[in-house]
Image (cartoon, rainbow, N blue to C red; front, top):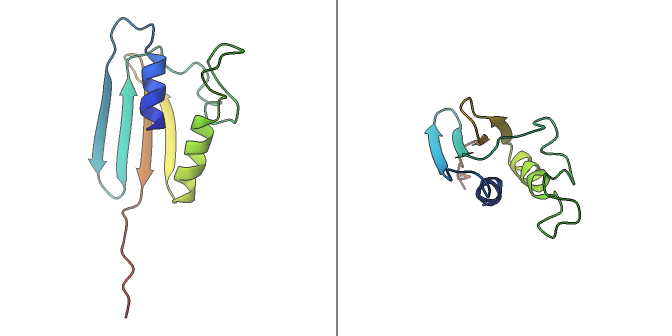
Length: 105
């Protein structure tokens, strides 16, 4: 949900507002959230705690959302990454292993 909320915020001033969510079934489940906002200015910093593109003093968050998302995804053995789309906007991808029910003897 955090990725969708961030995409909405990023597109506030964009002339075209569109979010695409895609699922890819492969060795791992991959979920991608893409927006038509301005993209990621500092891709190497986006998961750092307290990193934010919001104005200083803004009441719109503290820059912890992506850092928390990163920690949660990692705790489940997954991976999360953010990149700029070739034709503009940002793409965040979450990869997770499939859930396997433990067999009880």
